[in-house]
Image 1 (tube, rainbow, N blue to C red):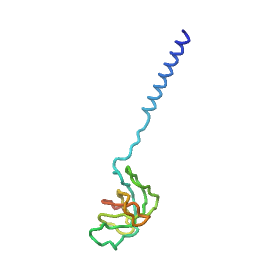
Image 2: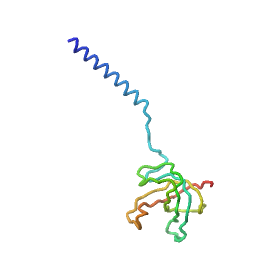
Image 3: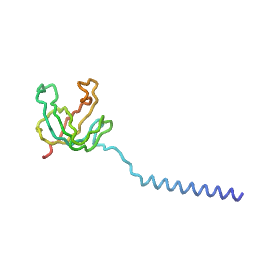
Image 4: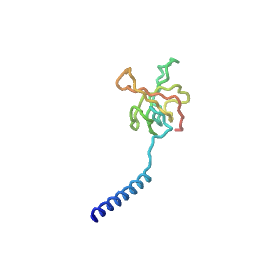
Length: 136
């Protein structure tokens, strides 16, 4: 009988200590969440204009430019790919005023997978609606 009481008492002491240890770990744990400032399907980048496609002068089509990715500040949920440093991508701009070849800018780039692929290298359509020009 005494051995059974000792076993039960030891069990409760161990259970109580484990509970305190788990609570202490939960209180010290940092919760990591995605930055809320980057919308889903977007990546926040700093880029440089390499080339502007002047053949698309039609007003109904967005202006396209070849952009070198200098820095990726973050990704929103469900962005379709990860950029590597100095990767070059074609981006559709709703308007390109104030930017020229060599201009640096910061923007949220929307990435959407295309169902109609013109060529294998452009499976994802990248679009920028707003940007901030940066000093060189």
